[in-house]
Amino acid sequence: MTSTQQRAALQRQIWAIANDVRGSVDGWDFKHYVLGTLFYRFISENFVNYIEAGDDSVNYAELPDSVITPDIKDDAIKTKGYFIYPSQLFSNVAKSANTNESLNTDLATIFSDIENSANGYPSEADIKGLFADFDTTSNRLGSTVRDKNTRLAHVLRGVAGLDFGHAFFEENAGSQIDLFGDAYEFLISNYAANAGKSGGEFFTPQHVSRLIAQLAMHKQTSVNKIYDPAAGSGSLLLQAKKHFDNHIIEEGFYGQEINHTTYNLARMNMFLHNINYDKFDIQLGNTLTNPHFGDEKPFDAIVSNPPYSVKWIGSDDPTLINDDRFAPAGVLPPKSKADFAFVLHALNYLSSKGRAAIVCFPGIFYRGGAEQKIRKYLVDNNYVETVISLAPNLFFGTTIAVTILVLAKHKSDTTTQFIDASGLFKKETNNNVLTDDHIKQIMAVFDSKENIDYLARSVPLEEIAANDYNLSVSSYVAAEDTREKTDITQLNVELKTTVAKIDQLRTDIDAIVAEIEGA
Image (cartoon, rainbow, N blue to C red; front, side, top):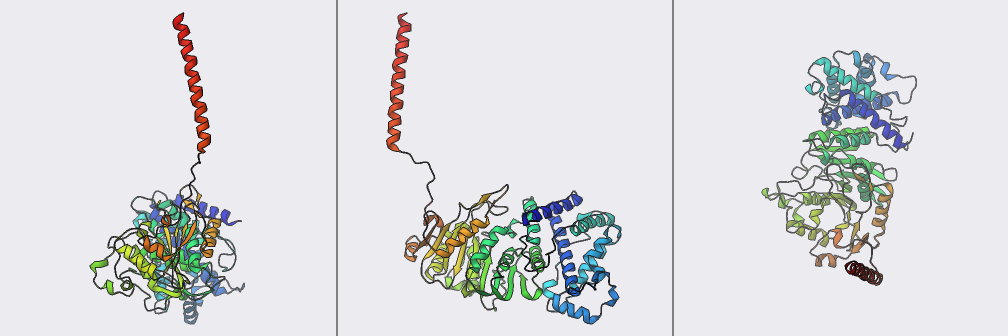
């Protein structure tokens, strides 16, 4: 089965689960039940693989809970970060779900036990609250216990039937399908537009994530760690992970997310991509006012799609102008537009050898005031490597043609590259997409830094300064005139011919009129 076929099959199966609970659970809320169940199945099967360690004589699911000794449990938690008893495994719970009259409370207890198993261990913070959005007692599932159990059983049975292939747990199996990511993208694409429940701001499409990750990782033979200051569901970090076959990573994946639900999804996403608890650190909180990881050594790779033009405290907090992240620029981003606050934060966390690739709202590249002063700071200090304008309608929930800002602290010259990639996209039903060929084309231009008509230009600092530090791609890369060109000489010939024909027609008409009047 090809990746496309597997993806389509997965989506059909997920939609079938949706049909089982439709009418009771709102689409946006339903997402949490499916993703939570996917996660429950994954960590169960992953844990079984760890315990059995390839020994065909061991069948962990069939063992009684009583055989588990404290030492076995302790060793497992130290390694995996959590513990699941045989009776608590997804397979065993799903097997009896249809007839279990206490299914909802049993699930709640199991989820609590899994989370609590990490208490007192280094993994505690990474495990705590993972199932917080999976409320098995919610009236959204039904007004009676029986109704709740029926719909939970439908979801469990549906997820049990999902086929992820034999290579589900194999790190280098070469599978092209992103198991969790594709399920998440499918759910987001169908539900993100629901009234009052956008959620689209938390999701970066996988094709855009691939481009951003490649930009940040470009030509780095090794990286110490990867960071996303507005992590969302973790998709950008996970796309970067796919490049680690050819890169050495020392310390893992770092991120911060302000939304509690999305923070849980990001941590789940790490586990679901075989990133163990000791290889990631996702923190909850406001990156701009309560940043984590400031005491860490700088990051070699930073990827980010921060929220567009959100409000922040800015100048209302007089201490921020002295913050190490903002002080060098000498000015704070506007209170109504925090875009550059995220940019300056990322720059501060960036190592001298690394790159940051950040999705930005286009307005920050040409507006005046504080944003112009920040652009001056970035350009004068030679931090801006490349500015890339993308096609519109690449993201769920917005048609905005966003821009990617690439920052670096190791540039060998003072030119800034501008790439107009607005014409590189494939039109699909709901959104435009970047194909692998489009990404390859952008990366080739990014690597070469060559001037290419209508596509890319490297601009000296002096020209940017003379243009009031405007960093809009359209100010430096001329758009190709695709209008049909007119041959004036040929046009004049055609006009003369047309006029002659009109004159002759008038003469003929006059003759006919005269003949009629004479009669």
